[in-house]
Length: 153
Image (cartoon, rainbow, N blue to C red; front, side, top):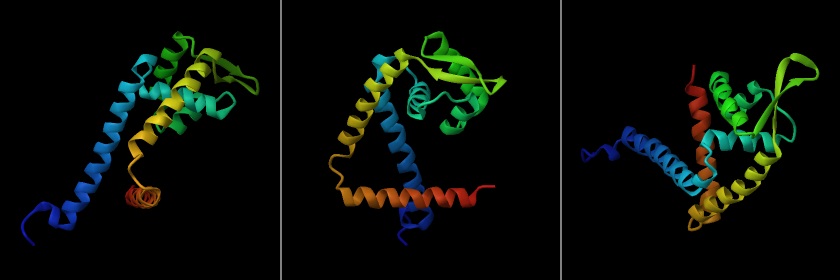
């Protein structure tokens, strides 16, 4: 051992996790910069894309589950999106105590414009990574997620 942190297993583990987090943060920052003209937060883009992709109204709880956020934070986000005319809250026809969230045509138009931009940005960022390395990386990330799930409470 030469005394460098990267030489120890703990050091390389740290480098991997930090690298994943920093790469993710850098991509989100790049996407935010590229999509700034839409004046939507990353969470707003995700919520709208989720609603559009669902093809049906969703409950706030289901949107929160799919975005992996709390229902309290999704309520605030939906308030903002509703004020902007991008979603509507409607009573659930099967249970009038519940609300369902529908995406408006204006929001659907936004999603249909920004999703291809994100896809193109992803392709651009990954352009120089060969397909075989991408598949290997996805497999490693899957193993990391599994290890994180197994380590949880």
